[in-house]
Image (tube, rainbow, N blue to C red):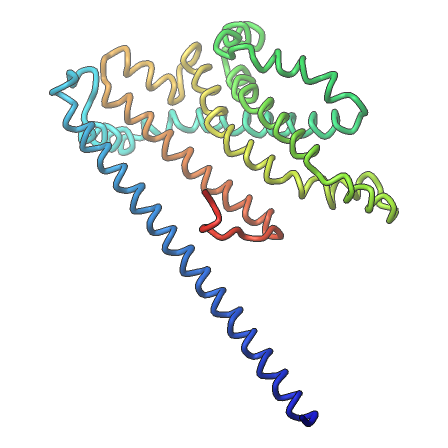
Length: 290
């Protein structure tokens, strides 16, 4: 066999491998699209079934005074959107939730990295953090209002208290999940503590951090609503409480629906940020997932 024949066979083999890789990539994209379509279809079917059951139960199984129907909820939501009532109340709730969420995430991350940088500190601090985390925030809400007043600050503190601890514990778990051999290798190569943090620890713990951030989004909202229920003259919590006192369940569900839509939009935004920050990680095939 001549040299030219060997070169020709090698080029043909490379071409076949390249075609196989391209085909595999196309199959992977096709599988992902099919899975996405299937999931969206099932979600839509579940939502439609839920709305039908709700509509059928309202006025038959349950009095419509206590359980409004979906059509009345949509009408009520449209009414408070058109007259500006929803946005006026939603502004206050969003400010409280956003500031509390940012504060809780920031303090949780800062505490996690600070505590794990000191030997034995995580083991010492853990019982204290678990004890404070276990206290029902609803029980602390009146005390927080006494300490910080009746305006914006107590709602921010309540929202942050439902975010901080979960972010802290998840971040600590992510830091401890970093491969110790990788740390030793980087130290041998002369990496500083800052380089270890920015090049290894932080990127490796990103999945844990973003998981905590997604979980605590509703928690921040709940904290703001608790404060509005107890002491407020503005906000979605106040709107829901006022409507509930008048047995206007359609407006109650309209307020809840507006919060649901907002949380879903925030979660979608956070998911995109997570994908961008974790773009260096390999994408798992959907067939491998349970």
